[in-house]
Image (spheres, rainbow, N blue to C red):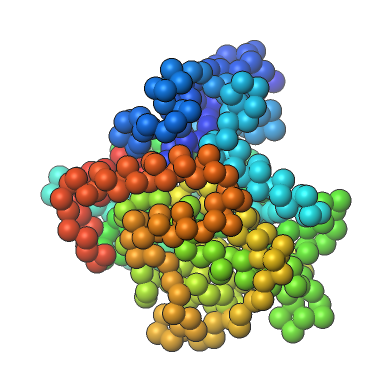
Length: 437
């Protein structure tokens, strides 16, 4: 038994949450939601995606709470639980969580269980009528990266987030101030891919709502201010044998302690770098973070504990051996970003792809490759659509819906008549994204 009220949550293709408050005694019963919700733009406009819009009469899909995801929430007397989505007794093909289920199953089919760990970066803003969008970063008088205490966090939210993440059993590793004034980070414990991603999804919702409840605004926008570095959703990956056993990315016989499986995974990520951007940098604003010089996942390369590379292998070995993907935008749908990473890595393994040499030194001033992320959302979507191997891995139905929504998002930007400038943040971006991300 838990709290008397349960808040179910599920993730749409924009990375936004939906759900319902239900009585605790009805936790095992499905709730019903129009399937068209999955093909709605951020602004609520339903996109004409065949099979999911008016052509099928806006039918109901079922959302059923997953018992293992239930935990205390941040609202009084309320638990939270992630819900699975089905339609006609089958998993909804375009549901982001179901995409991750398929990616996990693909790894299991070759005998491995993927594990993920998340680092969530975000900014906290305070109301200011004279600032663009009506908000300015809530900066302390002596902000510093890895800062703690009131000089780095005048809002007191870091301690609040610490306590809530711990109370909710979201797998707290730590909280701290990040690089730029007003920027924070929450690190969550490693775990099986679905569990870890569910926790990251719930944590992000909590962060925004708790800040709003105190009169602040927490934003995961990739780059909300041109004078700052951006916020990413760093995804760390390792795999282990499905039946149990040691980290399969570690190999004591390799000079760098990396197994062939790890190197093939890295090669797959680099090979499908452009498509990964299209799946995990979903907004016009995302591409103002993915720039050279911002150590944010721009170059299609990897490195040994080198933050100027996109796919970084941190220095720990043994059970902690992992690949950190620094490309995803803070606004990324965590399920789609994870599914894209798992599928790209698996394509490298199945294809026995050859891993290039790691980046040495400063990868921003002297990158070891000329390949990089697309420079705009439009370029990323073209690259995503052109990567047929990744399209097949993610699923054709999902690809169709994802492209429709992302291109609709692009059309909103184009209709606003803003000029693309990667080094400035347009008022439209703040107005369109700050309320949701």
